Image (cartoon, one colour):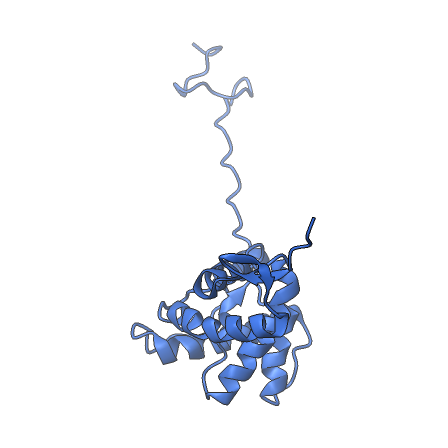
Length: 189
């Protein structure tokens, strides 16, 4: 039985595509996909959704897990954005589970000669600022007073909505028991 390649271009499943070539093609295809995402104010895309769109756009597929190829892919996207004087489009790519860009985003800051974040929250705030730059570059509906915002998923994680305490049930002042739906104590009647 022949061993199938780890990376290939459909419909030729048995013909290997060298991984550096795949990364290059995926990175080039990422730019228009991410520019499209940036056209919607507040939008982001998950790593998995980006990979799926890139596989469809290029026809190149891989057996490698998305989390294992994402760092190399987004590092190349960062370089393309710098070379073409584009905003940091990689800031639009977040994890589905927590809405975070992840530690790989530090490369955006490093490449720009900026201070690296000391905390997860600082990284996410830096990414939010970069996303706002992307929206301003591509989205015509950005409010003039728009401010950088964390993703809704991450915001909900760090600032959970506090539920109101349940209202106490009415109690009979004579018998100390909860009143029925009628509001009249059965024992007092």
